[in-house]
Length: 182
Image 1 (cartoon, rainbow, N blue to C red):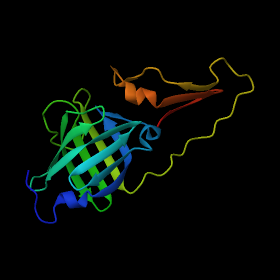
Image 2 (image 1 turned 90 degrees about the vertical axis):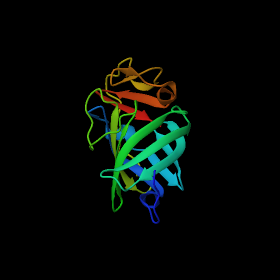
Image 3 (image 1 turned 120 degrees about the horizontal axis):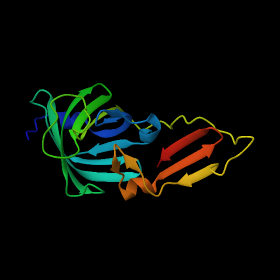
């Protein structure tokens, strides 16, 4: 990939919080990504998503339309893997779409079921604390009331990796439930 003076890689430097995430055509709940962030320093990235830490090298090529990037993971659950993607930066917003499996780079900023594509919108700066509704204990508690740690889970019909599951907590109170990661 080419790197030009004052490149697009320079625009990505710093901390970014995840504003939204869509995978395989399905939007992830805001609570699930509320604490997610990506940090870029030089040609290295660090991503903290749903309790897991991913690290590696990032290369960009801003001479294409759309602009492209490659992630090569050196640590975390994806160690040894690579993701190919496209991106756009406008002010303090970074939009990216990447292939989470395979070597077919996305051609547009969209996801469809079964593609393995993820679409993220990031905002410059640290994530804001999530707004989680306060829930009270019901007048007639059930045996499910309280906080429960995940021991397994599925996302888009596939088992979640153990590192992600480790951070999951579900709280039941009356007719309300809250699921948190991280």
